[in-house]
Length: 316
Ligand SMILES: Nc1ncnc2c1ncn2[C@@H]1O[C@H](COP(=O)(O)OP(=O)(O)OP(=O)(O)O)[C@@H](O)[C@H]1O
Ligand SMILES: [Mg+2]
Image 1 (cartoon, protein in one colour):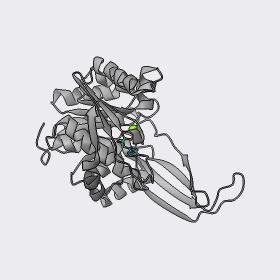
Image 2: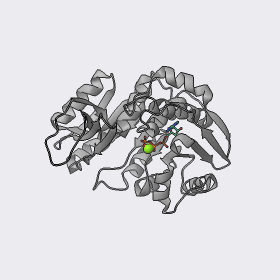
Image 3: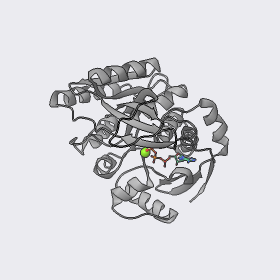
Image 4: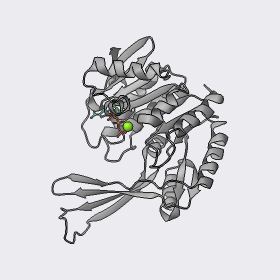
């Protein structure tokens, strides 16, 4: 691995979003509902990972697509957080995802907009930008689903280009886009149990079944596989070993984005020359720290530091 200061972690988040949070007393369908307050923040899985890396003292580079007035807002907000971006400008505007919160009941309703498919020229530019960025990167994270209509071979192609430059790949995705990338031997394939079920097309309920499922992904080319299961922790499986990590118990505020925070922690550990086993420990601490805050991708460095010694790891 290349030195981390000169060679940043490259976070690929193809479908970033502007997240709008609208707070109401209560919402009733079919009538006028007046908003108490509106907040917005940058969102998306790659964005979350980059935000956690930045919080923990690394200077990542975030790439993907952004366009229109919402794309400009996204860039401005990421710049305000000090996160370096190399987005390809699109004709289509960046999507807006809305969370409706009802104060009376604390109920949250998500309204998710899909990202538009980039046009041919934008894809061409993206591949050129990726080639340029990967030449300087110390590690690359490929996170999230592809936008509807994108070629399922995309992550496989990006992993191939990274591999040709000896840049380690962490991929956090599922189904065909993940399977396509496994043939390029990513350093780590990371997914939650539900995504493992979707990818293998079988129900997986027990820890031995999780380890067996992970071994199927190893057989398809991954060097290491990490399967996560929220508060139940995670299983790290390599060709000659299997480990279970238990996550520290934490007060749950919002668990969404814990997987992204975990990806960031692992990438950071690896870029600091830790072993995979140690890096995953940092990842688990980041996942747990994310649970403590209301916004996905928002962790406090002090929480990560406090939780790290509480992560337990034993043979699975
Ligand atoms: N409620 C929780 N309590 C403690 N640790 C948690 C909790 N939820 C998540 N974690 C930690 O974060 C890791 C990743 O969480 P999870 O399995 O929910 O990822 P995910 O489904 O990929 O999340 P997302 O896609 O929303 O980022 C877990 O393996 C665990 O270590
Ligand atoms: Mg996830």
